[in-house]
Image 1 (cartoon, helix red, strand yellow):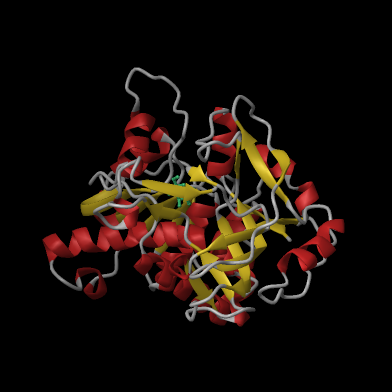
Image 2 (cartoon, protein in one colour):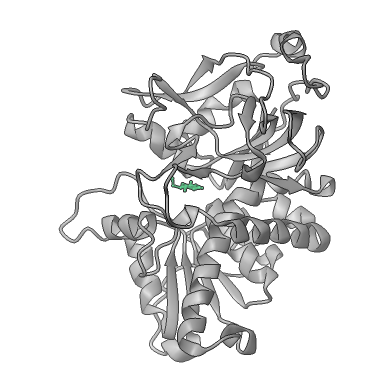
Length: 387
Ligand code: BGC
């Protein structure tokens, strides 16, 4: 764990007194800077952002307190082709965010100044006809990912319908809400499909044996969400049994497995639900061979730039995931998933907050963040910027 002194957080800003107070905190390094991906470059950059206007009618001014860095950020950078907001030369990154409401505009009653919130990532474009997480590419923007700036520029405007209230006692863990919402969606989709064919409550009567694959934040979040449901859970990775991530899996209550997954007796030793979070075609095919009858596999991990291959299974996984195919591919999260993710955080807060907190393996100041946008620490899980 890296400990770096925090950038001081200014006091809450009353509406109508914005620019003065924001100006006041410009001394701290990143007061008005965002971390951006620039077209044609793979390197993350600090960019100066304009001071936000006071929130207008129906708007909320938020300030980022914590920001998770994830594989998607690194993939956007590696591609050197970020989806830019119209007329912009860079995309401000950041989509896993815990923020505080600093001011609300006229007519806002849903949240008040001082409230802690987690913003959603995806926003439907006008006229979109499906649940937001099921939309086709082109029918949505995603903050920090697709054509809308993200939350690393620490002051941003939003609308209350895109914000989930976070109880103050969950402040330390709530930056994990967004990745938890991703796995919650996968689980909800699997339950819906399974109940459609086996009947309501089928996994309540007989809890599924779960395998989560991959030792990144999504793999651990998948294990955490399955364990919260009381489902017997295994986490697969390539680390040794005595590694820190294997120990964390055990401390969360998962069985850590590595090596060969395929089993001759897949009914007895196999799994009923695989939450595939590695994005690796090799791991996915191995896990598929360990699925018991009536088993469900959900793809939650993919590579943005798959390698060309004679049978491009990684491309199949990525398309399945991003287009919500019923393999089952799963991307983004619905309101029910965000609510469930907050339930996950609250459950872990009450049961074993220190174990869930160990998913955050680096806490860094904004000025030290760029390295983490290009690299993952060995044995690291989630790097979080503390504003
Ligand atoms: C985000 C999702 C997003 C997906 C595809 C993930 O990293 O967590 O919210 O939909 O990337 O852009």
